[in-house]
Image (cartoon, rainbow, N blue to C red):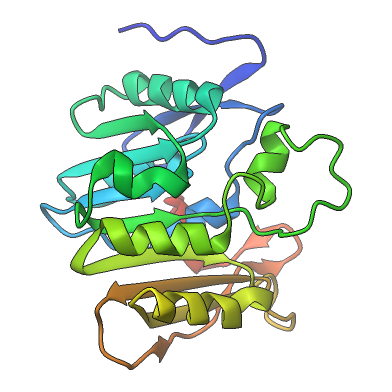
Length: 246
């Protein structure tokens, strides 16, 4: 099936299975955070996965390429973004493996039902404040700021749609770690793995990756830090492996 591109869109090649993705720089292009989350998240053979706020659809597409999961779903509130993600699914002939659903994260449990997924991933908006926003409805603003959903919305709905023993994977900012752990425990998702991401070896962390288990016991593993750059513009070997370049 030939997939039509709209004005302003481009096709970017991914480093997995020769998959491609459609993006529009005027909306929101995926960044390193999504790639790092795709390397941190684990989807086991036969499992079903949901990505909350899927945007371009990058996480379902990458995790389909990297894992033996049975089915992958992306939920996206912005209709134009969801439609574009759906065309990326078609471009890669993945219609039987990936669904893109237009809907609100705050309604995820109503859309899909309770205890439906083995794995939930999310690369949520990081910022709570609206400082500097020119429009609260701009696609980039919605992706970056808690306009359409809050961190609590994400974790509450994750707890509802996860099966008992299901896993939650999220990328976020270290400054909100205490809030993240508090909310996960409030909604019965026990933090199990934490990894801090540092831009350089001698710089403080600016990204965190966290895994939670619905109904898990109290014990969390803090993994070795992930360093992104060896030097300016030069990725470390581990990051190159996550990208699929080596």
